[in-house]
Amino acid sequence: MNHKTQGYSILHRLSLLLFCIGWFWVLLGIWGMIRGELEAHSKPIIYSLVAFMGMLIAVIGSFHNYQDYLELNRWERLKRAIVFSNFQGILVAFLMFMTYFLVKDLAISRAFISFYLLSQWFLLILLNYCLPNFLQWVFREEVCYRQTLLIGTGDSLADIRDWVIDNVASGFNITGIYTPGGGGGRKELRLEDISPVDNLEKHLLRNKVYRVVVVPGLNSGYWMQEIIDLCQSQGCRIFIHNPYASHFNVPLVPLIESGQPFFSLQDEPLESPFNQTIKRLFDLAVSIPVVLFALPILTFLVYIFQRVQSPGPIFFRQERGGKGGDPFTIFKFRSMKHNCPSQEDQVQASQDDDRTYPFGRFIRKFSIDEFPQFLNVLKGEMSLVGPRPYMVEHDKLLGKDFRAYRVRQFVKPGVTGPAQCAGLRGEVTSPDLLQARNEMDFHYVGNWSLLLDVEIVLKTATQVIIPPKTAY
Image (cartoon, one colour):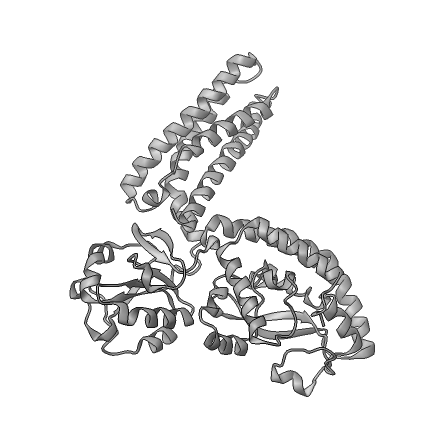
């Protein structure tokens, strides 16, 4: 089960747990208003916890093959939802009635327990049936416009003929075929073959191709590496259908998508909707207090010093490359003189840069100028932790010089990042330094965890207090 499917499974289970305990208290309140008193008033917490534990045990034993569950048609999913709901409802009912007889609670209404269990069973069927589609809708993100391009020869594409023809609503929007050397695709796939009429690089640039599915054949060695490098340079996710590992100089990551086995060149924990949710909640938990309490005070102090040393706008705005290479406007406290002629050259600040006014040097050294980026975090353009965003022009140049550079754009850029907390911040003075930063960013994309984010934030906080030598 890949990260995305695993995330859907976890969120489905958590939704059932929250529903189980939430519906108990909602129904208890409604029951009390109708009957004029709160039935089960003697031990409501115990019964709600028992229901929660019953559902917890039930969901642990459910949804182990969630990918299969996602791919069921409506009637088959309804039947499976009824089976799951029977198992979950019976387990909760057994534990609740066992608790009732063990504690000999005469205050609770057996009619209330029965109505709770019966209504919960009907709602569980509805939830188990609807949640998969609902979760896919909530995390649809790029599903509506993501494009997939098949690359292979006529013979190799024959191996996935049935999958291509039967593929429906799986997140693969297959829009065309490219056959290296112009060998021609399979006509029965009913897909446009772009190779006779279009150059692959131009096609990737003109169309927002989300991923490329490469289907190698017996004689694919002569075009494989060139195609991979080209697609990777354009920021496409690459799935390899065949396990010909000898063609690649990086470890292949096995995954299952839409019922077919593939290899990817990059593991992506943040493809999981559950991981996305956890990361977003962590972002909000930190950024909301900063924006409400710290940012107003800092803004006032910076404003006062700017009025004295360098009048002008308090914020500096600049276009940066975000997730997927999409540009966004980043916010910073202005640390350079207003209308400085060389500021338009998009030249990085250097030590003793004459464009920086005195207090600007101070806020840059202690990273105070970065605090307005918490507004970008609240807007969803950035994350608290991630690869630092470069200027759009720099992204274009670096994408040409470093293979797989755009892997760092698979996730949102961060206010801080793995390279920054390691002291690799400030001006880029050599290609080796830039390569070291990129390698740390690649490692972050493929090895994300909440603990890693917390570790990076704590290390960054330490460097704010005790800045490294590269902070200027």
